[in-house]
Structures are given as structure tokens and as C-alpha cells.
Image 1 (cartoon, helix red, strand yellow):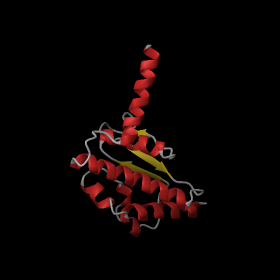
Image 2 (cartoon, rainbow, N blue to C red):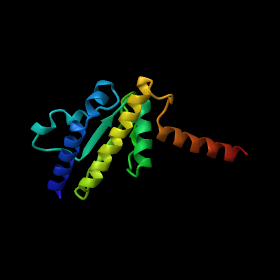
Image 3 (cartoon, rainbow, N blue to C red):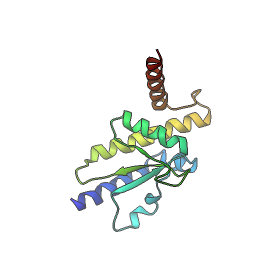
Image 4 (cartoon, rainbow, N blue to C red):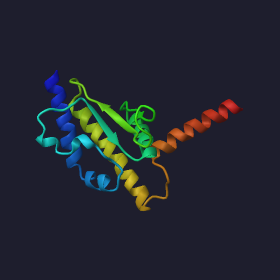
Length: 146
């Protein structure tokens, strides 16, 4: 099982760092995965991988991942220092390659959408997943207030 975890994390790093959107997402501060630096030179990996983004974007990424069927929650203050929120991915030996591929695709789709918003190519101010979640919250609040 431990070997599978090692292979799964290695596969995740390989897919993330070779994805075409990765360099631009990192350069623009949309994504950061500190453990992915020099991943190919390390003999061992931990099963917990933090994914960093901008403060608000961390929540938006968690919305995006959850809406694509991937359980991910932001870790925020006071668990981590203020301004250093992140998503903590947990890999286990039973994760399949298609699951890891879906995770990478989802993260990279989010990054691509944020790059589009930031560049002004989109008129939206927030990604689809955030707009959807906020609309659910507004509808719930309106229902309770009625």
C-alpha cells in the first residue's frame, strides 16, 4: 500500500508539472505546490500535498473541486498562519490513475479559468463554481428570510 501512495503522489506531481497550464499558473500566482519543486529527484513522498493559491482563490478552488466530485476543503487561519490558506490533498494507496488524472484536470481547469478572468478575456469576476455556490447561499438566505 505504501508503494502505491508513493507512486500516486509521484504521478500527481508528474501530471501537474507537465500540464501546459502549469507554468503560467505558477508564474501568475494562481497555483503553487511547494512539494512539487524538484519532485523527480526525491526518493520518497508524503501523502499530504498542500496546494496554495491566493487567499480567496483557495476557497474558489475548493468549490471547483467539490463540484467536480473531488472532496477538498480549504485549510485556513487559525490552523495555518493568516494569509497562508491552502487545500490539503490526501493521497492513499487505493487512488487510481484515472482519479489522479481527474484531480489534475480539475485543478488545471480552475487555473485556466482564473487566468482567463485575470487577463480580462472573461467579463466574470469570479469562476463558475464560486458563482454557483454563492447563488446557492443567496437562495438559502432568501428562503430563510422569507
